[in-house]
Length: 426
Image 1 (cartoon, rainbow, N blue to C red):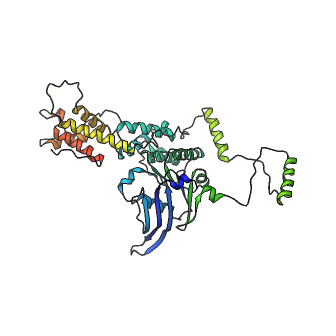
Image 2 (cartoon, rainbow, N blue to C red):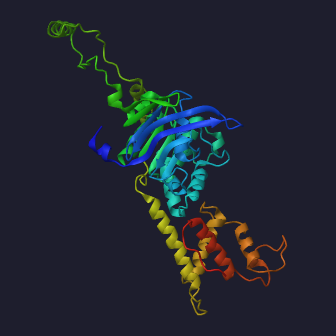
Image 3 (cartoon, rainbow, N blue to C red):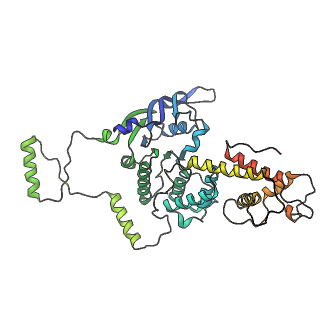
């Protein structure tokens, strides 16, 4: 364990963490997690291992605040896991990817980006980078319901990264992936670790955990059976491995004689060197790609998205608040009748907001009046309406969008910003 890892602040701290599941009469039915102690430090890749039923998924759900602990202490970023303020700092890929089957990958990522309040230009940039990173850019307009499990898994990983999380929780991220996707995920995790991400990885593929994890905990029956670094846990103090270029049989005999004479033991086995199956497989794939062989599946993927590790979360919130503040100042500014029509005004800004709302963030201009406009008109004041009248702008004598309509839009934006100051009441 290095000095830097010892000094890093803990992202997750668990002391005596216990979870009991009860029956209808509140009698203890099963103890899924039994008094475990561990911590996940900043900027490390932490492995959570164990067979089925060992308590891995229960532990992850308690860290996410989806389950309440029965006893013990648990904190995430120094706060209770149920604290809403920590949710935006976490990215989560569950064991099964639950995606809307009738949306395509671009629409799926746009949807999750909107949940985090990201502005339109940022959404587009991040979606493009993530689709390229996971190798789905060429199927960005196919319905997710047509995807294989591995392709849906790639999209789920992109969804977990859309908010540039400080703490990334991955539950079986390589489940359903082919060897190419598995290799890519491991390379991605190593790169994210270099960029300062803290990662919790739970997997049944022990070789993958061994390749990428800094430290690990092994659970069985809800208890910790071993924990430490991969080097500490996997070191074999009973054997010595010597790796040489190919040598003659006579040289091996001399080495055996030397070992017998100096150490009093014989060489147990001599085997020709062999490469790992993963290395051989990836070499064949690279050769096929160099020949530009056609494939209908996911591509190998591009570089890691540039925004990951940039800490864009607070900046995104500040930009959103600045937009709302600008709309408020424009609303309070008195309008001038002599103002030229082409000069940008508050109305122009509001029209941009309306266009985005009506287009659903897709960038296309609305082909028909949207529900948000009709609701705004109905809130502006009483008046006869009918399904055949159309939008307010097409009804004779109807007023264009009033100040009340504009305030409703601003108040709606303020509600999305969370802690932004509220606008004036009409």
